[in-house]
Image 1: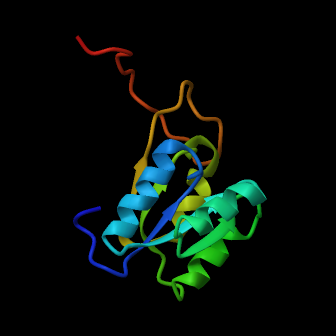
Image 2: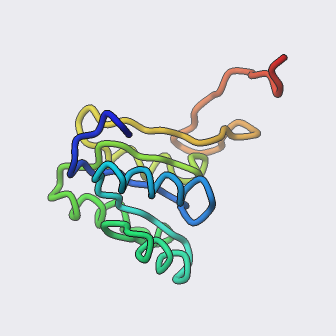
Image 3: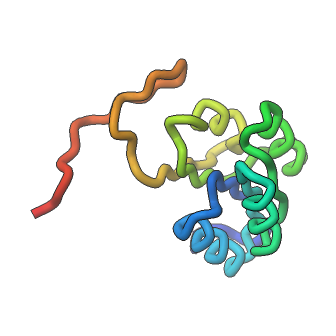
Length: 127
């Protein structure tokens, strides 16, 4: 996040856990406008209370259009994705030109979606 200029937009999904809330706080510390998504009313309220610029319901089918509207159609500069196996297909159209996607974690199995990504075999531990 240190490479972001103030007033850049980031979209973060599933932020109500420890990693997500820490990411939100770090982004806010460098004046990044966080467009957050949460799956429950309580989670969305928490994100709003924690300082998200705008909060969306990631279960709503039109949230990607709402995110684009919040950026005046420009898109977000970065997406922090906690549920890539569910949301990546919706994420990519929200990305601004030269935007980036950061995926936290990796799927345990190959994804079964129209936007499938094959992950190379990776060790489960490092010696």
